[in-house]
Length: 301
Figure (tube, one colour):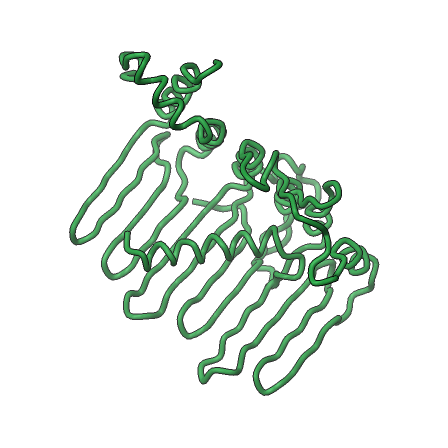
């Protein structure tokens, strides 16, 4: 994949992560369907909730990125990742003050404040609106500086923000935020439109033996190389088996088509480009078996 495409993927990931987890003032949108029934249990809702990201480029290459992630899968995988600031589903921040603003105090003030507009800026360069409406924090930015306008709309439920800040001091609880998000109705969270890209992030409930013969010394070496990734891989595959027929990623542009999905209980990866074609089809049970074998041969196991 070209460096340009890699940058495209990074942009998509950053948008999704920043919008949902790391910025209590970074989100807006409109409901796209009726809220889920209040009688439906949180557990059953969580199993059916999907987070979707679409990035469509309008330049000559016409790139498209589609990412679909079950919230339950993310809830189970995140606690297995213990790297740098991320530990057991919580991310460590140096302190809860950013630019001399106490974020927890700010969130508490917004929670207890009635609906209304907090910030309204109108100028020849841009319009900015920050408000609380129907227990949602809303941010709307219209950039008028360039000849071609760009617009950002973000909406995040206050319950999700509360869950995010429910961890101890100087921590953000990502798993709690995901769990709170799973209880929300179908809604659009982020919308970005400019002359180069259209971005949408939304939530809904509709979506689409050989290892046993490998010499032990080679298995031990492979286990050592994959040691840090094994817990994540194990949790990922375990949860992935709950979605035997689902599309997780699709990238389409003028030169290539990349697709990752599960079909019939198998993980399918297809890459089609002028200079290469890659097709991978592997049973999820086989991937799980490989992971188990590597864990058994890991040092100290």
